[in-house]
Length: 464
Image (cartoon, rainbow, N blue to C red; front, side):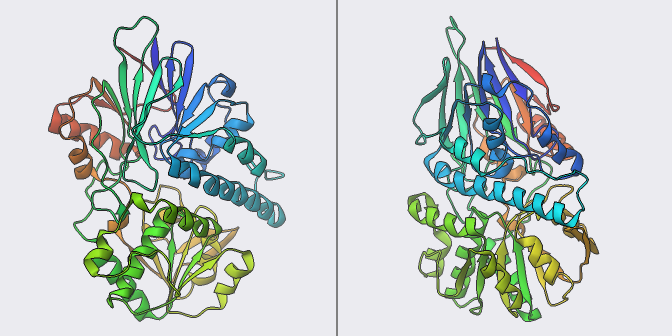
């Protein structure tokens, strides 16, 4: 029997976890943190639905925390198999997970010190020792190369165009005695076409079952160009005279922003203003990006006739806490890029607490903001933002740059899928319910496909 269990990102965006069971073998595809509203975050503390020691292997599509962030906890609870992922993701994974562990430990200490946690004492979900153990289980595999995470299960990675190292996974599962394999594709996160720094997503491979993300399944991104949109928002922020705060994923989005901002400044389309990258992880990730330069697409820089560089004298790297704190004394105009991308933790919170009350400040929203996050609250027009137990007034201007979204929209998902033979069944995950349901209807009308939205914990038997 071949079964698929939806253990996360079902009816929600975060916590991607899909368990493939082939007879008595178990392979887990992604193992992310639940993020967003409190009721969703609390799922991180639930016992894993199957014994972690019973999982033969994990296959990781990419490093973002909503896909990788529960892995150290899985290892702590008994998973001892191999973790397969692409070489760039393997190089980035430690940066992400050590940062996640550090943020959790620091937030727990801060909550205990200030006494605003309902847990006595507040504890981190995992620590750096758990990350150490997990990283010893990593096995990098080049894209296009078949590997066997468990007996009867073959996989290979293909470029998903979402971030450095991101992949969708082609799977062939075969029970003993099966004449032909059951073919499954796990999309991971599908990137956008013509996205800065990243290649277009590779075409999906034919499959019997498709597990497809639906983050933007109910909408299309506005027609715009990243350079033009970022130029307009940044010019406005510079004219306002204050700092522009950008809450950004430390890996991927931060490098895109630096690349585009430097391209605009080098081309004379923006004045030279200082840029602070306030994240040890982003600093280290930039080095990894430069090691894997063959994976990058520098079209924007070539079109502007400037150097293809992620570094410049005006780009300042803040690694230590003291370097981060020193930015508080800086006056604008300038740009501060800090994580986390949805403002759920990290150094961006301190900059927000310090600068949100200043009407000269601009907060640039440069990515998807899940329901229940501080980023979503700002997008929805919040006048106050709760940060570390205090209500901070929002007097800053809030702007969005839609063109920098890392997820394909509905139109781009259809473009990606066009030409794919109809799967027997498509399962829509990694989307809020309205987005997933809308995409199911759209795929039915466009392709005549049968698409469903699984519930959390659903178990589906796959026919060969």
